[in-house]
Image 1 (cartoon, one colour):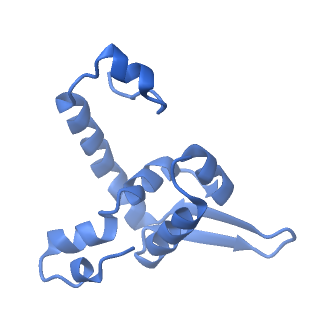
Image 2 (cartoon, helix red, strand yellow; image 1 turned 135 degrees about the vertical axis):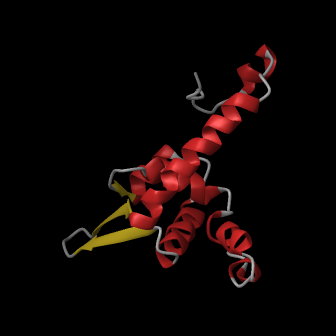
Length: 124
């Protein structure tokens, strides 16, 4: 899913978008936040993502150094995910994006709100 042309660009902004530009990666980073989470927990918190895509995105986030995968040698196997230092440094940027969206988001009409199945916004 990663576009290697973005990651190999001479422009630092383009490379950054290549690393975090996918629609799921910022959501995954936001959900993990400062805690440690298991795959199944992520899958239930983000129900719109398929398990296959979630696994691919987690792998790419690990390869890009934003995520740490902690595998335990026990039966049944257990794997935890947490943000690396680089991933934690991205959290304030996500907060700014959320604030920007809350400020400029167009309010939904009552009919549109009724059709929405997403959790309520965390905007003030």
